Amino acid sequence: MRKLFTSESVTEGHPDKLCDYISDSVLDSYLSEDKDARVACETVAGKGEIFLTGEISSTANINIEDVVRNAIKEIGYWGEEFDLDYKTCKIRINISKQSPDIAQGVNNSLEDREGENINSEGAGDQGIMFGFAIDETDELLPLPISLAHKLSKRLSVVRKEKIIDYLGADGKVQVTVEYENGNPKRVETIVVSTQAKPSIERETIKKDIKEKVINVVVPSNLLDENTKYFINPTGRFVIGGPLGDSGLTGRKIIVDTYGGYSRHGGGAFSGKDPTKVDRSAAYIARHIAKNVVANGYAKKCEIQLAYSIGVAKPVGVYVDTFGTNTIAEEEIVNKIKNKFDLTPRGIIDYLDLQRPIYRQTTNYGHFGKKNLPWEKIVEL
Image (cartoon, rainbow, N blue to C red; front, side, top):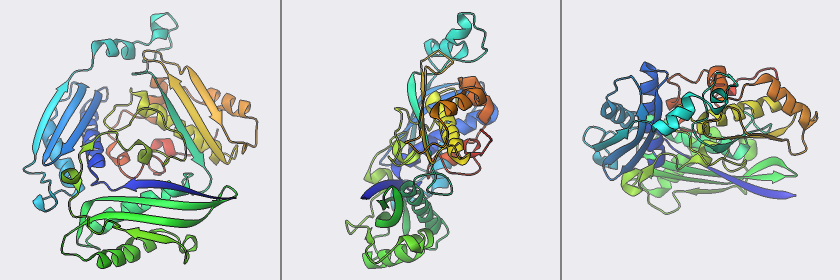
């Protein structure tokens, strides 16, 4: 049976990803001085202006405006040619402290308050989180999102290294993979939309993107004479970034995870410290799912964790191997329970999450990067 599945990724200069990067830069700045900082930082970008809001409780003394301007500069918005200038853009900051009602449930879990003495913080919110892994790529991610991330990252590389010297920071990629009997067979379609200087002809852009981006990234055995390419299909992409479209933290959650191939919980990641299980529990769920596959217990695995605000232990743990398991799913669940402490404190300590490691997660997916602690292979 032939099926097509599509995933997308965006470059680090996409307005939503610019906001994610700013929020994670603020988070890292606080964690670098105060590992116990409570941070929930949201960013909005639009037409030469950056607006930050949220809640931060910390002993650290951080110049947030400097952090924001440096983040914008690192992404590559250096001047007014493509709208946003890190030196002159307007920055507004509206940050308060974490609500004491939330803080009391995080600081002391319901279990501790009722005498269980498990010595763990409660979850910072209720919610469901998913982790996923599949054996169709080396990083155990679905092929469509893996290729989309690599293509969007390559777009940023050729821009910053001036391999293609006329590109702007904003861009999007979409990859459609043909599956045959559940296995990836070939790439059906690649869509690339990239910001470029107005003086550059579309035919030049198409040629350069095909030669210096697509052919460098996508294995030749996945491309054939029937693969379709749509490069800047509107014909012109000059106005981009926050001038072309407003940006907002947390609006690319499918890009951040599995490209729609697996389910996603309700919460975004960026700008949140690890007491927020939206982030930390999604990381441990990926770690568990990846190791179920890496240890040979299944070819495909999805994990769901569910939490209640103020309660340390998850209220639900769900495993689905889609019939690919080599041992009983009940045995997999028992291995998970015996191996992992899934309380917020247990996750934080196991993955060592109270460190300034989050800016590197912002772009090109939170999963699949070898240097991140939740991507490590362990014996399960």
